[in-house]
Image 1 (tube, rainbow, N blue to C red):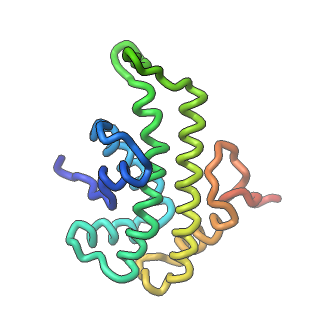
Image 2: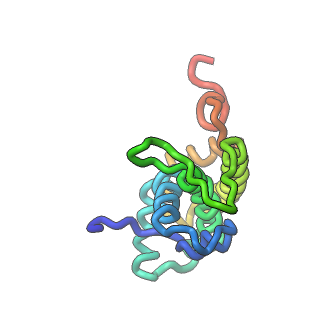
Length: 180
């Protein structure tokens, strides 16, 4: 891959933190980590700070507040957000026959509702670490010059609730919209 995405965590860390099977195929897990980082984490940190963290991690120069951010918050957020992204990927496969479930002797696949419950559980843990990360970023804003005022405004708006849900509650994290 020419433009390979630099990840802020490893498959091994995600497996350890989120308690995933050691035999889990790397292609599924890597895809889930990339989505959690490039969609979820980018929405939390903003592009400038995420790209700075990726560059520092690639150069092995993470130090100080950047290292604390990655080791104390980003690693945990990514583990649970990746698990939430991963579960549908491994529960259902897309192939020439469409979307299918694989059955193996001796193993009973989880029902769709059971998969949804596990996704919600993993997402709730990711939301918890998101909330802690956002508070840390605001409390230590001066240490992260990559955070723009707009990023901080967005973080503050989301601190009313770091919960992810499928219902649009109006504006950032549930507080009305212009015209109310």
